[in-house]
Length: 283
Image: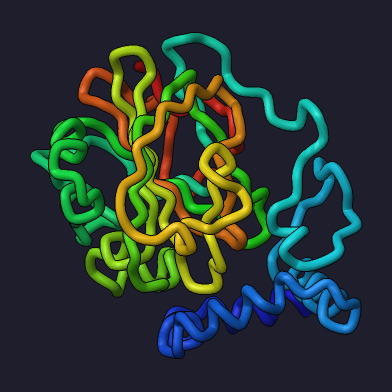
């Protein structure tokens, strides 16, 4: 039954209509409220639907008993469930994800999918920060609704600043990426700028439809970035590789940028499932 329903729901025209041609912010706010509800009348059906439709794997979760759908989304893992690739020169994936478009940033331009370019200075509002990666490397990491939703430091690093950029909440699945130009630049997002030693690093978590919030553990777990409001906050936060950075309260996307001197791993391919901690690049 599930496979049959998913085949219908993933038909491109229908999927795009159902997940984009509706009041996106209203739907996101509604799902956020449903996800936070702990009353069994709401929580139990919501959790059951999530497990049925989203291919949820809880085999490495710290617990499988959740008070709300939100608790399921932001679940922690058992100790040692994600091992981060060792080595000062190794950059790990910050999250569980499906690898999307990746490769070289060419004169400030990169791709959300083949044939749909956008510019890094449209995604990153700080022109100076964008310029550091104008000829660097990028990798797009998409978190699906059933995945582990927390993300971690991909290397030993210091966070220098966090910029919140208000925006829309288009779906970020491959169907939408093929239809909405400059989608990541339109959506709500955070720009986390940092460095590992002398090497700059940029993480851009992008919100999407039904993503009720982005929370950053090192900044203020109790408040969402939306509640903090737009603008840039200076930081000086040292994180070891693998340290938790924050979470999405639904699946979404992180675009990671590395400088020109780095290299993505040769075996990386679009559509590949990857786990937090797996080696993804080398400084």
